[in-house]
Image 1 (tube, rainbow, N blue to C red):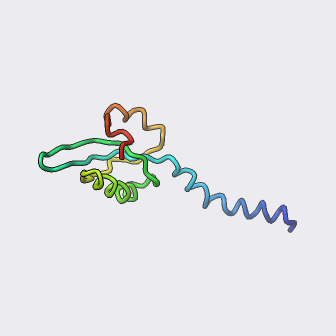
Image 2 (cartoon, rainbow, N blue to C red; image 1 turned 180 degrees about the horizontal axis):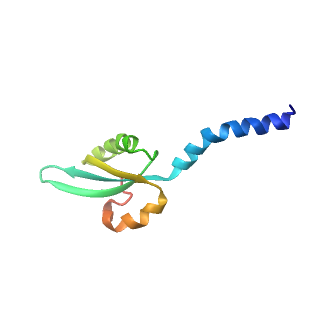
Length: 97
Protein backbone atom coordinates (compact mmCIF):
# COMPACT_ATOMS: atom_id res chain seq x y z
CA UNK A 1 0.00 0.00 0.00
CA UNK A 2 1.44 3.37 -0.96
CA UNK A 3 1.77 6.12 1.69
CA UNK A 4 -0.87 8.14 -0.13
CA UNK A 5 -3.32 5.22 -0.11
CA UNK A 6 -2.60 4.57 3.56
CA UNK A 7 -3.29 8.22 4.43
CA UNK A 8 -6.55 8.15 2.49
CA UNK A 9 -7.63 4.94 4.24
CA UNK A 10 -6.80 6.45 7.64
CA UNK A 11 -8.85 9.56 6.88
CA UNK A 12 -11.79 7.44 5.79
CA UNK A 13 -11.55 5.44 9.00
CA UNK A 14 -11.57 8.63 11.09
CA UNK A 15 -14.46 10.30 9.25
CA UNK A 16 -17.27 8.66 11.29
CA UNK A 17 -15.55 9.62 14.54
CA UNK A 18 -15.12 13.23 13.43
CA UNK A 19 -18.59 13.69 11.95
CA UNK A 20 -20.57 13.56 15.23
CA UNK A 21 -18.40 16.25 16.76
CA UNK A 22 -18.87 18.44 13.74
CA UNK A 23 -22.61 17.84 13.72
CA UNK A 24 -22.85 18.75 17.39
CA UNK A 25 -21.20 22.13 16.84
CA UNK A 26 -24.59 23.81 16.63
CA UNK A 27 -27.00 22.20 19.06
CA UNK A 28 -29.62 24.03 21.06
CA UNK A 29 -32.10 23.10 23.75
CA UNK A 30 -35.35 24.68 24.78
CA UNK A 31 -36.14 24.37 28.44
CA UNK A 32 -38.32 25.47 31.36
CA UNK A 33 -36.86 26.90 34.56
CA UNK A 34 -38.13 28.43 37.80
CA UNK A 35 -37.18 30.63 40.74
CA UNK A 36 -38.84 30.46 44.15
CA UNK A 37 -39.91 33.22 46.53
CA UNK A 38 -41.57 34.72 44.61
CA UNK A 39 -42.33 32.02 42.10
CA UNK A 40 -41.13 32.93 38.61
CA UNK A 41 -41.10 30.68 35.56
CA UNK A 42 -39.40 31.08 32.23
CA UNK A 43 -39.03 29.34 28.91
CA UNK A 44 -35.64 29.67 27.27
CA UNK A 45 -33.35 28.52 24.50
CA UNK A 46 -29.65 27.83 25.08
CA UNK A 47 -26.77 26.56 23.00
CA UNK A 48 -25.50 23.21 24.25
CA UNK A 49 -22.56 21.04 23.28
CA UNK A 50 -24.58 17.89 22.49
CA UNK A 51 -27.94 17.28 20.84
CA UNK A 52 -28.98 14.79 23.50
CA UNK A 53 -31.63 15.78 26.07
CA UNK A 54 -29.89 14.05 28.99
CA UNK A 55 -26.54 15.68 28.22
CA UNK A 56 -28.21 19.05 27.61
CA UNK A 57 -29.90 18.80 31.01
CA UNK A 58 -26.59 18.04 32.73
CA UNK A 59 -24.98 21.00 30.97
CA UNK A 60 -27.81 23.49 31.50
CA UNK A 61 -28.63 22.82 35.16
CA UNK A 62 -25.41 24.34 36.58
CA UNK A 63 -25.57 27.31 34.18
CA UNK A 64 -29.08 28.13 35.28
CA UNK A 65 -28.26 27.50 38.95
CA UNK A 66 -25.46 30.07 38.72
CA UNK A 67 -28.06 32.58 37.53
CA UNK A 68 -30.45 31.76 40.38
CA UNK A 69 -32.73 29.46 38.39
CA UNK A 70 -33.65 25.78 38.74
CA UNK A 71 -33.98 23.72 35.55
CA UNK A 72 -37.38 22.04 35.42
CA UNK A 73 -37.08 20.27 32.08
CA UNK A 74 -35.38 20.19 28.72
CA UNK A 75 -38.21 20.15 26.22
CA UNK A 76 -36.18 19.30 23.13
CA UNK A 77 -32.83 19.61 21.42
CA UNK A 78 -32.45 20.82 17.85
CA UNK A 79 -30.13 22.39 15.31
CA UNK A 80 -29.93 25.99 14.10
CA UNK A 81 -32.96 25.48 11.86
CA UNK A 82 -35.20 25.57 14.96
CA UNK A 83 -33.96 28.88 16.39
CA UNK A 84 -36.21 31.24 14.43
CA UNK A 85 -39.47 29.67 15.49
CA UNK A 86 -38.49 29.75 19.19
CA UNK A 87 -36.92 33.20 19.47
CA UNK A 88 -40.07 35.19 20.19
CA UNK A 89 -41.33 32.66 22.74
CA UNK A 90 -38.04 32.71 24.65
CA UNK A 91 -37.84 36.52 24.69
CA UNK A 92 -35.08 37.72 27.02
CA UNK A 93 -34.09 34.09 27.72
CA UNK A 94 -33.18 33.40 24.08
CA UNK A 95 -29.53 32.25 24.18
CA UNK A 96 -29.06 33.92 27.59
CA UNK A 97 -27.75 30.86 29.46
